[in-house]
Image (tube, rainbow, N blue to C red; front, side, top):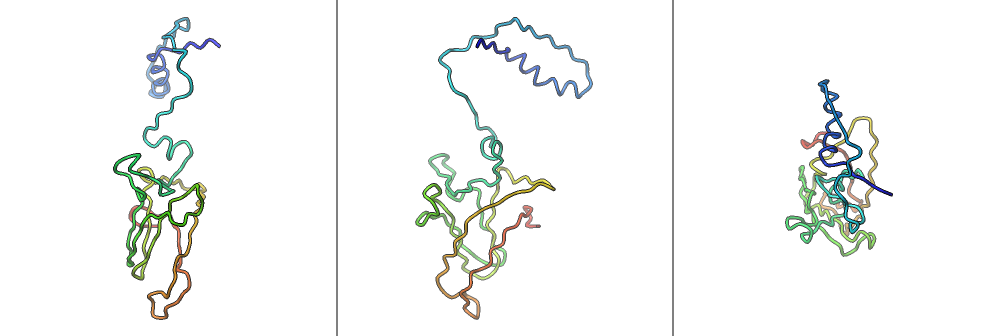
Length: 178
């Protein structure tokens, strides 16, 4: 197969074509198809994909939750840690959110977060997504997660019940509105 790439200027002009047509201004575009352009080295093999602006995370496979496996590491970026993009928000209750890996659900997912509620009341674990989480009205979104009840004693309430604590999932605005 004899591949002849278009010169970069021509590609740039083609990319701007829809904008020029939309603006209604006249446009003349001349393309010399006989031009050979620059030669491509036969040593270049494979593909190139540059991960810009979360194109891989949150773009191509439509992932909305950032660091969903609590696996971010300072080995990748110095400012990252297991709870990057996760935040504990107290709403009347108090809790501690910490990463763990002692009893993973599966070897392919060795990290998880432990939420230890230390004072009765509501607490929220919030994910920032990729510069927010974009949702659209009328779309369907599927969520799956695993939760394990690690509770081993009587709760702090007046009857010292041993029933599991309620777990609620909801989509909220940054202000906490449903």
